[in-house]
Structures are given as structure tokens and as C-alpha cells.
Image (cartoon, rainbow, N blue to C red; front, side, top):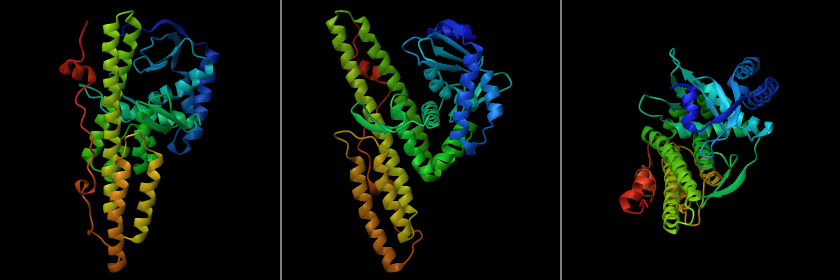
Length: 367
């Protein structure tokens, strides 16, 4: 499909190239910010500046359903909403330029991988994970401060309060167990270092489940936004407004459940794995602090109790382990928990995307 066809399909029109001076200014500022923020990741400033200057940049009319900036690998171009200021373009362009850095293309020009996202012929895998990692890096490059916001009755603290906020919080939690370096290294270099590190810190099934559920979470949010957009076309049709509002409330609940399912799965498996590696009283002290400090990274709601319940349960188990160490000395294979012994998340698995579910339940009724 040609780039012209892609633009028409996505509703991008009134395309105009940015002037050379603006492009160079954007390239210089983006290069400086990325190279300073990620000094240890092998970015060559001269090469990066030269490459970003070669990206074709345009202003255009962007539909409300699309982000305000979009990178297309096929013709190595970025399209900005024509209403953006230069400063706003720079902020969004950092994200899109990281996509440029991370792309892996075959000899025929087909995109094989984008950072943490693999692209087999069927469908992308890890899209949400990659977008969140890229956004975290963009926010770090811009030296964003942590802000506390609330979405879908979930209160979160994040450096990306408006772009992929829920996904960024969850991926930041993943990085708590792996460290930042594997996450950012794999995001920039499109390799499996982060995946392998997280699997070591949890297990393979947990990693793949989280990646899949993050993709589902992102798609649920996109579908919900689409449904919300339908409200403006309802006019005075009270029945239609009522039906759409019912869809919206159900969609919000699915997003709420999905977020906490991912968070609780991570808490359960990663900390249980850490618990099982404790051999000394020093290990126990470090573990106790790590579980406690985790409270600052998670999302909360009025009815959320999993983290507190888990904390109490795992601390009781830790006390038993400490007593054993005090009496018998350092341990090796004794005192292990399995995830079922610790605490099982009480979150139902959300099925498929909510419009399909609504239809099955008879809630989604076409007028």
C-alpha cells in the first residue's frame, strides 16, 4: 500500500512539508536531549543528528482519532498536526524519532521489529509494551516530573500523565524488577535483553501474559475512545445516548479490571520469585524494603486491596524465613513459596474486546 493510500485511509490531509530551518532545529534539539538522557547507550550524536535531518517532516490535518504526530517507516516520515507549535512538535517528535532509531527492516523494506514489538505476518506482539517504553524514554529525555492523575477510577503517579499513562505505569513496574538498562537497551536496539531479564525475574508465562494483556489494555482504551467519539453524533437521540453511555461505563470497567489484573500478576510472580532467592538476613532486609517501596509505583483505587493483602502475607512468610536463618544459618533451597501459597489475584480474566462482549450480553443494541 502506497503512503498516499495510508494517509487517505487514516484521514491525514492538507499535507505540507516543514521548512528546512524548522526540521534542523527539531533534529538538533531531539539529538541533544536523547544523547544526554541516554549517555550510556551508544548513541552517536553526529550520526543521530544526520539521520533525523533525513526524516521527512510534514504538518497536516490529523483526525481526532489519531495521535498528534505519526511516524511512517515506509517513507521515513513524520506527520505533525498542523495546530501544534514548534515546542509541541519537538516533544512529540522525540517519541517518533525513537521509533526511527529502533526499526528493523529487511532488504525488501518490510518492518520486522520495532524495539520490544515483534511484527510477524499475523499481528504485532508487544505493541503496548514498546509504546510505553518509548514514551517513558521520551519523558525522561524531556526531564518530565512525576504527576499524579486519575483514569477509570485508578490513581497513578507517572512521568507521562497524558500519553499511554496506564501502560507507562505498568511498564515502569516491570523495570523495577529488571532495572532500567535492559528496558531502554532493548527498546533502542530491538533485542531480547529485557525479555530475558524479566523472565529470569518472574517466569516465561508471566512475561508473555503481561505483554499480551498490555496489548489488550491498549486496544480496549482505543475502542473506548472510539465509542466516546460517537456521542457527538447522537443529536437528541436519547436512546442512543443512553446506549452509548452504557457501553462507555462497561468499557471503563474492563480497562479497570485489566489494569489491576496485570499489576497483581506482576506483584505475585516477581516478588514470590524474589522471596524464594532469599538466603541470608541481609537478603531478607533488602527484600522487605523492595516490597515496601513498590507501593510508590502502583495504581490504586478506592476498592483495591491486593497489594496490601500480599504485603501482609509475604511479610508473615518472611518472618518465618528470618527465624529459620537466625536458628540454622543461611539457607539454599529451603523455605520456597509457590505463587499459589502466597496469594492468588482475585481478578476475573476479561474476555475479548468490550464491544463484542456487550453484543453477547445484549447491551450493545444498534438503533
